[in-house]
Length: 478
Ligand code: FAD
Image (cartoon, rainbow, N blue to C red; front, side, top):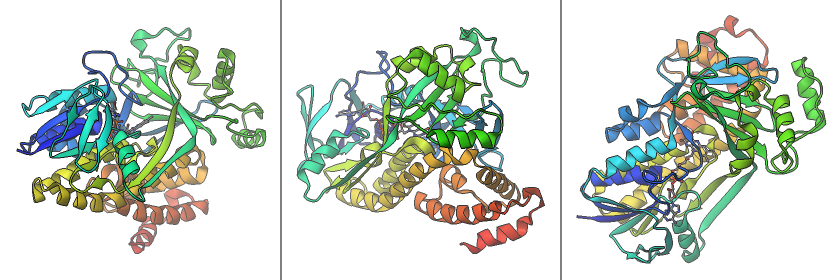
């Protein structure tokens, strides 16, 4: 029996343990944190995540998809909130059945660990931080002082990977780039109606699910050009909001804010700016929210408390190469390719990594050198593509969803998806096409986007357009 050391029992490491155990491999998983099933440790960087088709495909292969989806909240589109609190839904797809799912990070992680532990060949070791790795052998030293050497080591220890650090230190000409956005993020909370403590009476529109204070089946977004807030529904009726602001220096010039206000035609010009370093008082935070997110603030009774209590996280893209040292070590998931969260693909991509690796084990057995070389060649071009698209999507979410030409393009894409089975928007190719590599989604999607933005810039009525003609031009791109 082959023996594998996994470093990191996060989302990728726990799923990988299940996949390897199903191939009769002995697996020891070392995790720096305590067991999250026994102690109340923060699950990680976000409370909930968008799970979509690539991630679901990987869960399906080990029979975990239905279990996870049973506690997920479907999100059918982006609910865009304007500066005066007007909302409009931009569907993710024109086809029924294509939507993303809000799942609990901790719930998913725990379910994966529980499933992995059903196999006798899997053992988790908690409070065991990897502190050193011998890249020549794949042996590792942990904070528990135990030294471990299996047939190979797979590092799923996340964006700040210590295994990657060891590889970079001992590999000549190691390529490593870590690029951080000027923006950081902070998580905030909108409670469920059942625990409502706000002064304002919660909305009771009949079409809303009674537990939720906003439309439950959407990813809510408040795009404000230089910054934004989003909110994902939780199964218990609450929402987790994430505000993305520059760390320092203000988020918009007075001129930019004035011009946006003018376009909206309903807001006075605003001159004050805000970034995390400027929002230092409770009244400052309130004033900022009242101005920028007026429809959200009545739903956020613990805004100031959350704002000053919750940590501010960084957002970055990590690219590195090589990912393996012969058959001794492999980086997988965020340790190899951390990305900004704006396509909702980091976990989905990490789960796809596991599925691809498993396909190569099926072909080459436990000849780890051959498996890793094949895996890296197959995967790098695709993870580069999704990392780039994730960065681009930040600007789409922050700016474009409030841009009339972009909104018209989304309507046109919805109509194309409703009419032609072979039309997929870039978003759909990335999110709903587990059969399509990310690199192809990027190439086709960008060409399509350029064409459709050009068509929509004309200002013609989308409902009057000759769809066959538009579709012919799209097909001609292929
Ligand atoms: P992680 O989940 O980070 O797990 C790494 C594990 O390794 C952790 O348990 C950690 O404690 C452990 N560890 C670290 N160092 C050591 C060490 N030295 N020794 C032992 N153990 C160690 N992705 C999506 O698909 N959809 C989303 O909607 C989405 N939203 C996101 C929102 C935010 C704000 C952020 C920051 C990320 C989001 N992501 C999303 C990305 C997603 O969280 C990551 O891509 C995913 O968690 C990667 O899984 P991983 O197992 O590789 O790393």
